[in-house]
Image 1 (tube, rainbow, N blue to C red):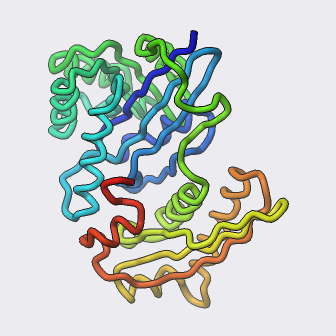
Image 2 (image 1 turned 120 degrees about the vertical axis):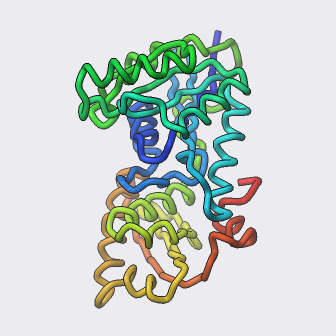
Length: 295
């Protein structure tokens, strides 16, 4: 008897949702950065064990949107919660419930979703603060379970999986048993490149970038990828490229290493940079870059 469950992972930006997803799946399927609002789309991480298939849905961090891209990201969270069997709310041990978390809990309640509270980054906390955080959330919502974790260290993930078994229901699997994500390889390549931009550039510029993979060719044990990095200002283009192309070469080198590890073959990566002003406010550009209503 095969079973499955679709479980949404939600929370404010930069609480470790993507790190948690990667830890659950055991592979890097979602990009990770210390900068907030790293995740822009819903990302599926699929874990199949025995006859059970979990489909975890990583979502953008809930925030107050300032652009059409921000609106898309927040709507993605709402749509994901609307189609899930359960939710995991990820937060940090702050000792209280924030306004954003209260909004998310309200959405979970309105969708009548069973839910688990994950208090992440416990490696940066102490028992007293963790206890106050658990009490604060217990006063707001009756979660099925509370699981303290340190996702970057892999602590608590096995306990979380055990708690999530309650959401499995008899069903055919939606994905083959050896699949870990439903993201196309081209999209994964674009996300990996964007992650390296987030890691190597200063705070504001990466949030104004998008990556489009124009060409993805496989020949034997070599994959050739041509991708364009779009930014919003000419001054940003110069920074992304760097003196003598040094910054772009660094991004390309880091991205190629991750791509070769993920794809299991050699990768030739050709990066270009173009300016597309205010693309985050353009419905047409958002759709072209994979942030449209049907993406």
